[in-house]
Length: 388
Image (cartoon, rainbow, N blue to C red; front, side, top):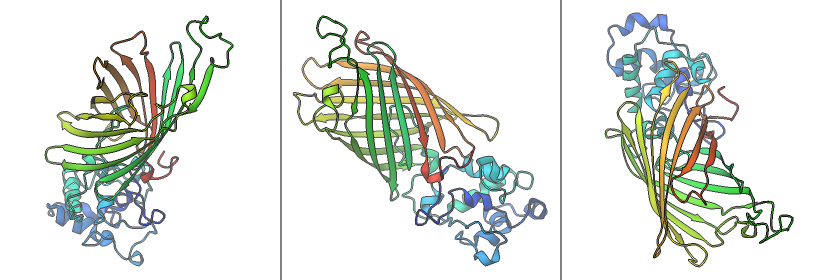
């Protein structure tokens, strides 16, 4: 769920339109009329147009009985972001089901879900620009595999290696969407790790070179652009170019010590039964192969979402398989498995957590299991403490 903003300060919340949808009339006032009015256009005219206007741009504020700003359904940045299911939830159950104001009453008794879907289908026509990907293609975010859908998010990521030598990796990730298909991303990694050697005869345990050390990782800056998307086939494909800058504290084992370039493709595909498949494949190109080699990588995530009750919390178990191969003679190829569980934390469903474990499938003497976790805030939907 995302927040609508005209100038990022005055636009209403992204589902405020649903809080007001049909709110100019009560359910009891409409039930007799909707028996005869069966099309989406007719239902919209009966229940919505007096507040939202025939063109979906909103009625004059002086003509409505509340002071909540009316959204513009013709604004594609707003109208395209959410899947139909979220619109129906608020229209059917009322604003509080997603942590919004009670100005939007529950219309589940006056309108069937089929009729609400017809209304939403008509509202979708107010955005006449097909370049904007629909919210149905915004799949849950895996722990490792990148998404194809452009987002407005802030993510805190955590990785903990519990076996000796221990390590804690962190990252703050900021994503900002611009235009219909593009997104910029900035990742700031930092962490701590135990540098105490396994062989104390090599370096004494009390040496300045041993013990827990912290440092900054290599900052990443990326640009994503949607190459194609189809609601009919349930497919989205994006291309991303990322650069990782040599900002890491290499003296403490953080960062590669050289600039790396990462071009890759990401895709998502709707599968039957509320399931989905996401994939990522690309290359990491080193500008100094003496410090780090070129690498190819491929990742895939398979998952399925369940809703707690008809309108409640969303639970999404996923499993990722990760592969990488050094692009040099005799280079190693590695595989990992990452089972995980994502869950929405609040009613608005714009605060999300995911926890899983990274399990190396080879070279396990060196590559250790890790506990992986993130908290995601879709800041376009409102403040972190909104919608609980």
